[in-house]
Image (tube, rainbow, N blue to C red; front, side, top):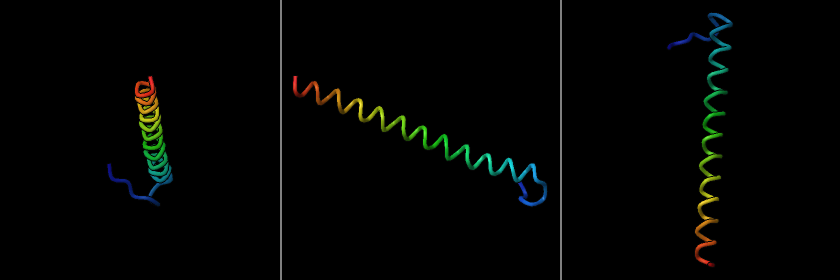
Length: 50
């Protein structure tokens, strides 16, 4: 979908929302992956020490 910013306020708002949404989803997926990474490394550390 090609939006022309400035042509209509709705398109501009949609584009802004899309940018924010993409950034948010990227951040949340990154946080989730880093959390699982920390969790798995903690588990392996426990296995090593046990």
